[in-house]
Image 1 (cartoon, rainbow over the protein chains, first blue to last red):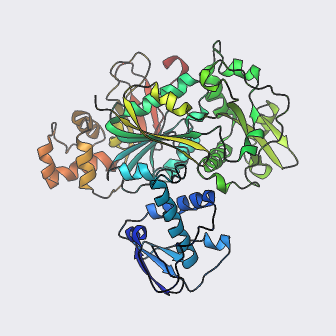
Image 2: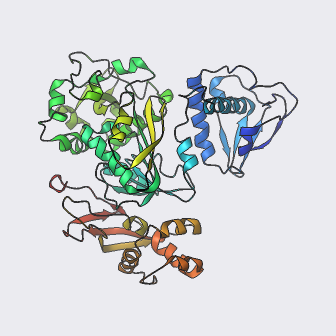
Image 3: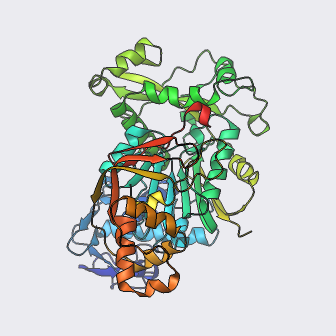
Length: 403
Length: 122
């Protein structure tokens, strides 16, 4: 695999990017040691995939090597050539892309098991014209991501579903734990960053059962959840562990309000525009943790006064897994509806004058290594096709069995 | 809400054994043109409960679908066009979906069905 630095400009077909043998007479770029660390490579590769997914394999990629730039920020720039429905890349971007592809090839050879573009495999296995059900679609980030498939999304949050509908997506308001779908209708189902918002193992398991139920035999289910094993370990220390009082009220065996306290209550208490932003930004954290921008998503330092979790749940007995993850809503956005004022008054949110933001806490049950596998293993009717760790998320792909 | 979605939806109220199909109450229907795609229609035909689709489309004011359909009809372009129109281009913009067993109404506003259950329905 060779690529030249001085070959002017030209076209490559997308599928050729995987099989570039020679494109000129300059020196090899990707033959050199990768100069980027794997995290960065992985992250950028996914950025590229997002773009490439919008393309047909036959679409051409335009590359221009006349303006090579060495700055990282410049290397990240990509722009679409709309008239060709192709992708414009300068040389440094192209060489980076080739490095990334090399990294993936290494991965496929088992050399770097944990470098894994999130939905790439899911995408490969999905046949064209499939019906994909997104349970917990949020603001519709993944609806329509694969233009060859038809998506129907649902979310428990009506404000988020309104955003999806405004974008033209086919959506409804429904609970991922109790999908109002008849069985076997979808070719595939996806649950991206949803299960960690459910506060009991029973509800998480029910959500998995529902995903499997609604796809046809042979259909695929992709599940991703936040991992306890965050790549940025310092991050975990900045979350607020739920103390014993919350555990008893929220997930304890005697809790009479398990469902209502965790979903309806918080949904009502956070006004529309704010919730939209909250979920959108948190999903961004899930999917592209490297893109976290501290000025937009800042994490509280106040983890004082909370004792470690002493759970009877075997899967989580060794670790703290229940957290409040703070989300900061800047004052200028919070004042739009005035609902934040009520939230603060009711103790549902607090003000942080230093950061100029109202701080909401969102419930998370972060998954420990192996926990997602154990959870889905307790559900009949599917086989694990693949499992992997991707940017602080545990991910799993299931295939519904035929019987 | 398209009839593609209606054909998937089922009342999941606790205790309901046959929540499909939901009866449609129409206040407003709109039509939106969608690209015609034979592969998708063929894929969907196997999943579709035809009687529910035909009945739903009649309720929505479109009476061109036959009462019964079998896969051999997918060779007919005329049939495919009608199937396409009913499945993807008719939208229930305002109205309700009614559980066939309990009569519980699920509202549809701005084309969005709200299928959330009350606490005592779960």
